[in-house]
Length: 614
Image: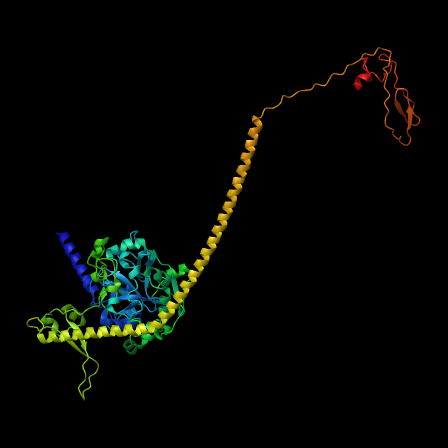
């Protein structure tokens, strides 16, 4: 029993907390606090709702849009010298796509946190040869709810890059990324109607198969405002099949003031002059400004798309109205894809998703559909949202003013069926058909006239580009022919060198064969027997002891004696006598005497000179 009472008390306190949470907060003008949302409060209030959402403070989200609406979808990307700019037919695009940051919520879908710094866009990019993706970057203090946690989990202070989970990304085929390039904006050139985007369920797969673009730039008028430039123009030229010269010429001629809902409307600037202080002067005046890539990438990544990089002056308008406070519902804190079912902005419209191969060139122009009957309760002072929900369509009809009567502006007529039957009357049906036909004819004439004007403007440029292209083709052909000629010469020289090498190899082989044949022939011829001559052994004669063999006197050549020497003739030969030296004789007694005879060499062998002469 006590447990039931405690549970009832807890439920009552929770309901009371929600009621108090959604209660109105005191007017900010009473506290004297001036925030950035005061710059956009009056301008965006007609198109959406402001709420005080948790720690993010006042945020805004559009109303009167479909359940599958998401930022950077109802429009197209346009290349400029300052990066890629989003052109849209949404009247709030001049603020939400250039200031502040978008982030998803469970209760309200995509909400926008305002800021005071102007950027060409507040998105980051992923690319590959097949797909190009973009995602809004959340504010610096963004803390995701569990339904938007990364796969690796969340921890306080995680980089914003890691918090860009697949639900943030929108992917388009690279060949269909440029919609209606060079043509004035039409609803058919919007990603919302293109029928070319990748299905929302493909985002996890495509986020894994694409590469994050790290190119970060800053503008000349705001050195501390860092933004992502987007895909490079040569890359888009390659994947989209458009000549880079045409893209560069378009980028050189385009201006922000010619794009739809990029600059604040004139009525906003007239009614709220403080808006001029937050729009950079070059942007507002339509002048060109330089953008420079950053050098310190870590610093740029830490301060990428900060909403308060450029502060505005004081004396901003005070918001006297009260903003309701919102509290996140605790039962929404769930993990996994199941938590995103039924959440606004977590899907794509069917007319934006490609069912087969995307064919942007054949996308039909939007046609006015017949309005559905509306209930009688919606007739009393319906708002714009109620009219859309009731199926009514607001058609502006320009009528000529009667003579002497001044009609200020345009008259608006609401085509609606009769309250009793709910079926349009024949008169209203006929008038609606006529007005629809007139509008379609006017739209077709406008398209044709703009196409003719564009063609007249582009004809000289196209002729010049064609001439340049032909010159480039001719130059490339000349270079190709010269390369072919040089290649043929190199091949001819190489062929001749190979021939010479082969001839030398053949000659060498022939010489080797001839030598081999000669060696074989020499080996096969009979050789004469070799006669070895043995020298005759000299006959030795024994000389008796005591006798000297007779020595034949052989005349010797006359030798001039050296100075100081005297030639002394001997009996058995010649002897040299130096001055003052005794004369020695070569005659001996025999083998047994003290000396040796000239005919013996010791030992009494008896060998004489006759034997040596033989």
